[in-house]
Image (cartoon, rainbow, N blue to C red; front, side):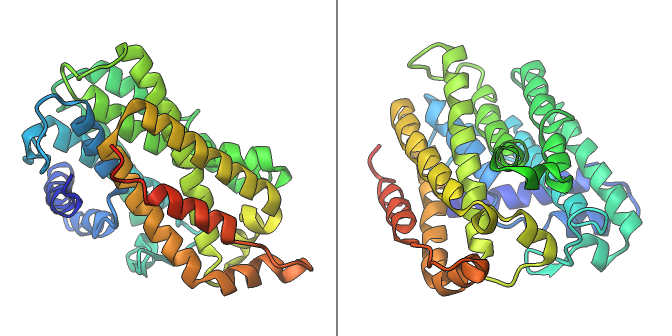
Length: 330
């Protein structure tokens, strides 16, 4: 899988699709600001990788799956990224996480206004469903998955747990928030990649394949957020971040859970023989491992402010490096 080439195609498609759903009004500038540049495009890449792994006719470039702007898979990839962007725009609002910066530039509500950020977030949320309606295969199933994962009992409830006192009460609530806010979008990416195909190549039943993909999405989603929380500690934290960061408040539990989820991921990805999905994930793990190594002193400084012992990062770094080095085993 040529990630760089596919990322460029996905970004071009996203811009085209945002232009499709946005009105002919200067508010379109806010839509484009909120969605570009789109960062790593981790979730759309996972979707394409899943489709490649299950497609009997896929090519290494991914173009054999159909990534032209009006292709079904392209619409679904943009739908996931658009929905992700909406969640970030709303997440940054003063009434929520109150973040002034996102991806190295001012948050949407800081660059424009709060009311514009709220309405553009609403527009991106609805626009994601508009793009799904353009898909060719299994649209009903895809809509069910999307609404289940990202609706009132999914991503939105994860945000409720995050912003309420529930997340700070115990580690179980914190992990539940991570599962709903982060893992659900990753599960959606894997499942939509699978159901985007009319006749996916199967080594097991379609039902069993989808269940196993959901498990992988949960494993890597929780691990993804815990790793992200850890790398946040390489910088100064605001008050909200310090209150909810698991590595400050539940250091031992966070380490055990991250280790467990990464090991489950390794087992499940090998069982499914998903080489392209694994390459996307291990590429991410390698980058995060390097970031943790570079910022280990600041991480320990943040963790040990109210503790007497230095936290040993080596087991986590070794595990990340071990999994990241296995990207060519499929």
